[in-house]
Image 1 (cartoon, rainbow, N blue to C red):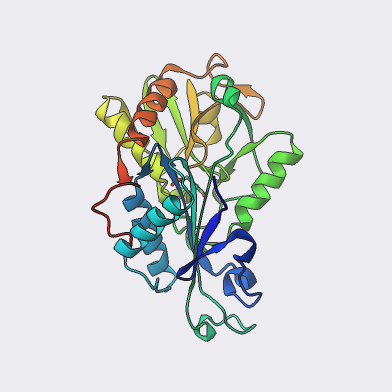
Image 2 (image 1 turned 45 degrees about the horizontal axis):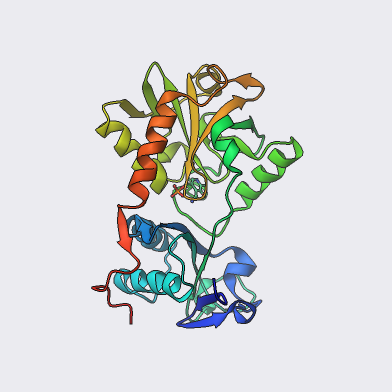
Amino acid sequence: MSEQLIFLNGEFVKKEDAVVSVYDHGFLYGDGIFEGIRAYSGNVFRLDEHLTRLYDSAKSIMLTIPYSKEEMTNIVVKTLRQNELNDGYVRLVVSRGVGDLGLSPYTCEKPTVLVIAEPLRIYPKELYETGLEIITVATRRNRSDALSPMVKTLNYLNNVLVKIEASLAGVSEALMLNDQGYVAEGSADNIFIVKDGKLKTPPGYVGALVGITRNAIMELAQAKGYEMVEGVFTRHEVYTADEVFLTGTAAEVIPVTKVDGRVVGDGNPGPVTSDLSESFRELTVTDGVKIHDESLNVG
Ligand code: PMP
């Protein structure tokens, strides 16, 4: 990769010049939204779905993104092209912008928009073969009626606290429950359990972000003839599942083999997880927007 260039408010700037004001409400209040997107072999995986979620998040917090969805598609593709990346991670952030010290978003004249594309550092490869050990943390997922977990806001303190708890316990991921004690999701991943060949994942309203990877896995599971339901469940069902796995843009599909000291199934990644993980890998290079598609009006 040549010198990294970051899209910041309409232009490409060097990494060291990509700075945002201390008066930006994204910094002062976590007032903004973001997306984590991934490119695989020149294909931006499900970019359209990511942008739909971004614009839905924007609508929910009454933030007007100063670009159309089509323009944003071109900005993401251009950022990958500028950085000569066919594989990588894209972080798209839209904050309320620069205002005064008050909470009111109405002092912010225009949103800050930035896109960072870089190679991705993921979990070590062997973890996909051995599976993750996770614990349940005390930190609960935000209540849906306080700050909807379905909106991908810049307010990730809830998730950061989960990471701290996990790290203190010596594991790299954790399970978050909602305020009623039902299973919600991981720190930045959705959770699936498999029992007798049937898959289950919590619905968004329980306290999960409706993940793009999650949706892809649900579609693949259904297409492959597995029974797949969105449903509410407790830790008991996680402990007694045959298989458990997490899904997310960064982690992809990662098996979980131990939860709160309980070995999942026989302690190895299970056949349903492996089957779906393989199909997901095939999908990542085909389903999306092609970085080098000449019909895109990237400019
Ligand atoms: N839950 C949370 C809280 C997340 O931040 C993410 C990552 N964006 C996910 C789930 C997984 O979503 P996706 O598959 O869209 O990356």
